[in-house]
Amino acid sequence: MTETTITPESAFATAQSQLRKVAGLLELEEGMIEVLAHPKRELTVNFPVRMDDGSIRVFTGYRVHHNEARGPVKGGLRYSPMVSLDEVRALAMWMTWKCAVVNLPYGGAKGGVIVSPRELSARELERMTRRYTTEIEIIIGPGVDIPAPDLGTDARVMAWIMDTYSMQMGYSVPGIVTGKPVGLGGSLGREEATGRGVLYIAQEACRRRGISLEGATVAIQGFGNVGGAASRLLAQAGAKIVAISDSRVGIYNQTGLDVEAFFASRLPGGYIGDHTHHIIDDFPGKGTDHVDITNEELLELPVDILIPAAIEGQITDKNAPKIRAGMIIEAANGPTTSAGDEILAERGIYVVPDIIANAGGVTVSYFEWVQDLQSFFWAEDEVNQRLQRILVSAFNEVASVAEERKLRLREAAYVVALQRVVEAIRLRGIFP
Ligand code: NAD
Image 1: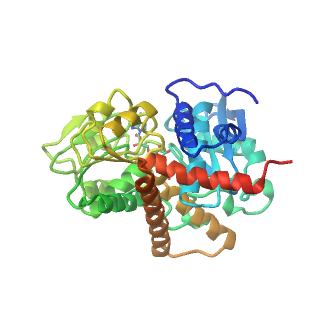
Image 2: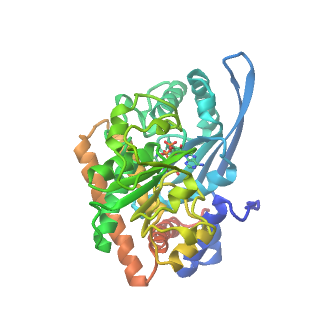
Image 3: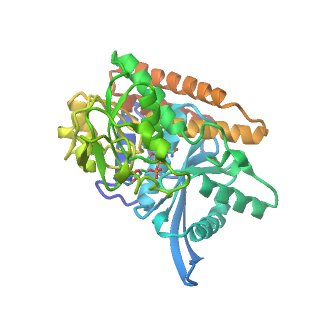
């Protein structure tokens, strides 16, 4: 096996360290840990795209399958200049655990292209997406690997992927991606599903902790698909959103931000990956007494609930000692490094880990795939009710394991997930 190189602070290092810790708790044999520690399949593609000015630009993209013991693999597609193979590997591994913890019949995958989507025109983005889809077509398919949106991609990108794959097959294959527009076989409720899942988890976590979500102060880092929807739904549930940020700036108002005013003013469309980039500067509901803050400052605000909903590696050993929130709900994937996590644990901060906190997205993606395969579509309240049922029961299962085994929620979530994946591997046996 080729050695996978990891740098100390990398996302893959965090993912591997989390795995090894829980593998130890479960007393897994070294061979099994090795199976779980390495992605099964990794594809790197370098491909040319004709730009609007006639020049040719070569892009690099990846698609990684971590583990397919429990079913076809599933995971998002990320467009970001920060994408690396190391990051995609980590995200693919987290998808395996996430699907297992909520008991979806999927393994984990992830993809990415090194690109700043805002720097491309819509036509260039479309050509780039279609060519990337063609390059990875050898390892995707509705029963193989089903991509979905992630950082920097959205329903429009999913529509191009669906069309490209369908053109190559010669017939329409809606089940090739999830997070599509509803008019193409997307599911009602999918767009806000991750944020809605964050709401359901926050409600359940508050209930178990004896805290009232109504009136609780909340700071949210990242105001994209996940952070935006979470802020709106939490505000509707009575929480007080006091701070939000995007990749450049943040705003804080201790008396609360009017999130609804922002959504009322929002133009349809906007910028892929950073749709709030220009809007947050001009956030209509920020109030006259708001203050501008940095992303770092947002994480250290005195709030009841902190929701990182942007990118990995935001809570580290440097800022974990300064965090003042009593509860952290990890809406982003991997927002806390292992060293940061240790400090949060010592300080007794209640952390709901990413693999359960943001599982609402993949759960409704699963619903979308099921609806596509059956060509039979559900009403939005049915989607939301099923989502709530799955997340509440998964959260309570994890919380009970945490109580019984005196573990933190992250470890307990990993225990539940790893047990399911290991069971599937053992049942299938090692081929040949
Ligand atoms: P998005 O592109 O819609 O929004 C990302 C937000 O983060 C934007 O507001 C952007 O300005 C901000 N951001 C980017 N870089 C930043 C930085 N360096 N510092 C602070 N803020 C930064 O992406 P999204 O789909 O909302 O995804 C956000 C996170 O949630 C990611 O970690 C993603 O993997 C995770 N996630 C997304 C889904 C989903 O369904 N979209 C599901 C599960 C997990």
